Length: 410
Image (cartoon, rainbow, N blue to C red; front, side, top):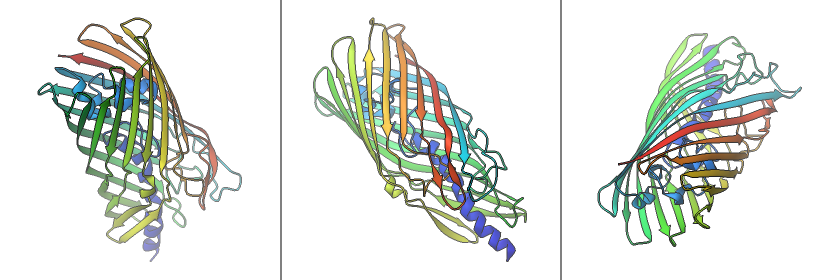
C-alpha cells in the first residue's frame, strides 16, 4: 500500500517534467514563432529583428522554414546553415511562507547548442522544393536537489531533431502558396524528488517519441516594395513512451505521456521604404487554451494534469538598414502575452509575458555567399508562482541567443 501511495504522489510530480521539454521541443515543429512554449531563435537572419516580418521577407533559404510559400522568390538552389548557443539564467526566490522548506535552487539555467540547415531547390520557375532540419541538445533546467521546489522538478535533459520537407507554387505574379509535413524526434531524461514519507527518494523518467504535424502558408506580393505573408501551424500531440523509475522502493514501469501543442497563425508584413531602409512587423495567435490537460499513464493507471492555460498573442516590429550595398544592419523588438497566471504556474516551465530585444547583421561576401550573426535577449518576466507546493518569484529569468549563419547560392 505504501508503494502505491508513493507511486500516486510521484505521478503527480514527475508529470511536471514534461513542460520545460515542451518549451524547447515545439520550437522545432516547423514555423518560427514565440510565445507560450514556442521559441523562434534558430540562427536565421530573421532572428536579428525578433522574427518580425519573418513570413514576408523571403530573401534566402531560411524561408523554407519561416514561410515555404516564399521559396518562389528564389532562383536556382540555395543552402543556409546556422549554428549558435542558447544560454539561460534562471534564479528563483522563494517566499518566506513557501510550503516546502529548502533553498532557492541556484542558477537552474545553462547552455545548449543549436544547429540548423535550410535548403531550396528550383524545380521550375514557379515550383520550388525545400527542406529544413533543426537540432538542439543540452540541459534545459537543473535546480539544486535540496531546493524548495524539488517535488516539482530538479533536472531535465533533452535532444530534439525536426525535419520539415516543403513545396511551394506560384499561382499568379503576386500570389504563392506552400507548406509541408513535419517530423519531430525527441529524447528526454528527467528527474524529481519523491515527496514524503520517502523524502530521500527520486523519480527518473526516460522516454522518446516521433511526432507529426504540418504547416501551410501564403505569400502576397502587393508591390515590388511590399509583401504580406501568413502561415498556419497545425496542432501536434507528441506522446513520450519510455520508462519511469522510483527509488526507493525500486519501482520501474513503462509510461506514456501525451501533450497537446497549440495550433497557431502568424501574419507578417515587409516594406521597403527606399533602397536603404525597410520596416518589418508581425502578429501571431497561438491556441494555448487547448493546452488544458496533460495525459499521463503507466501500468498502474492514468491521470490528467490540469494546466489552465490561455491563448497568447505576439507582436513584433523590426527595421533593416543598409549603410552600403553589402551590409545589412538589423534591430527588432517583440512582446508575447502570458499564457498562465501565478496560481497555475509551476517551476518546471517558468514562463510569463515575454519581451525580446534583438540585433544582427548580414554581409554579402559575393554574389553566391552571404554571412551574418544575430543576438537576442529574452526577458521571461518575474514569473510569480503561488501553489500548494511552492511560492515565490524569479529574480532572474532570462535567455540569451547568439548565432551565426551562412547562405550559399548555386
